[in-house]
Image 1 (cartoon, rainbow, N blue to C red):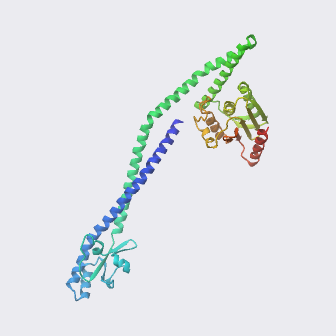
Image 2: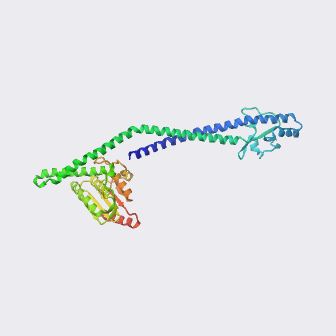
Length: 418
C-alpha cells in the first residue's frame, strides 16, 4: 500500500526532475553540436586549403598554358574532385558532381547530398587572406558528412549516458529523502494494525455485557446511559470492522456466494437503527429482491460505510432515501452535499472533506476497491452551492447493460421524489 504510494511519488519527482534536466541538456548539447559541427568544417577547410594552394601553385606555374596546368593538376591530384572557375563563375575545368549556382558560387559553399563542396579561401576568409589570382577553386569533400554523423552519434551516446546517470543519482537521492517519511508511515501503519488487534476483545466484552443487561431494572436516566454505551460500542465495532477490512483484507472469510442483497441490507439497517434514531433521521426505503455473487463480509463493509456516511454527514432531523433493486443500489442523504471538484477526491485514501465529524478517511476508499473488484459502477450525484443543498446520492450499478442503467435511473428519480 505505502510501497505503491512511494513508487508513485518517486515516479512523479523523477519525471519532473528528468523533464527539466532533459530540456537543459537539449539546449546544452545543441550548443555543443553547433560548435563541434563548425569545428569539423574549419578543420576540413584547413586540410582542403592545402590542396587548394597546391592547385593554385600549378596554375601560377603555367599562366599561359591552362590546359597543361589542368593536366598536371589531374595527375598530381588524381584522388581529388575539384572545379576551377574564373571570377565570373564560368567553368574552366570541373569534375564535380554538380557545379555551383550563381548564389552558391558567391557564397563559396554548397552541399550535394551527403557531400560538401566549398572554396576553402572564401569559406575561411575570416582566417585566411584570399589569394589574388583570376581563378576560384572549389573542392568536393568526401569526409565531412561522415565526420558530422560520427560526431552526432558520439554526442547522442554522451547525452543518453549523462541522462541515465542523472536519473540513477536522482532516484537514490529521492529514496534517501523519502526514507525517514516512509519509516514513520510504516511505524504508524504497524501501530494501527497492532491497535486494531488489541481493541477487538474489549469491544466484544462491552457489547456482550450491554446486551445481557436488563434495562427495565434501571431508572430512565440509567437506561439512557446504557443506551449511549451500547451506541458507542456499536460504533467502535463498526470502526473495528473497517480497520480490519482495510489493514487485514486477507483475514476476511474467503469465497463468494450468491447473496440476497435485500436481506443483507435489511440486516445492516437494523444494526444502524439506533444511530438513525439518535440523530432523529427519517429513513425512506424501497427494497426489492436483488442478488449478487460476492464475498459476504466485503458487501457488508460496502453497505456499512455508505450507510454510516449517510448518517454521519446528514443534518439533524434529516432524511435518508435508500433504493435497492436488481442491478442498482442508491443511498441519498439530506446533508450539505459534495462539491463537484471533490467528488473524485472523496474516494482517495485518508480523504476527509469535513473534519468536524470522526473517521479515518478510509471508508469510501474501501467502497471503491470493493466496487472495482466486483465490476460495480459507482458515481456521486450531488449539488452544492450557496443557495441549494440537495445532499449526496451514491449510485451503484453492478449490471452495466443499457436496460439496467435505465431501471437504475428510474428508481433513483422515483425514490428521491418521495
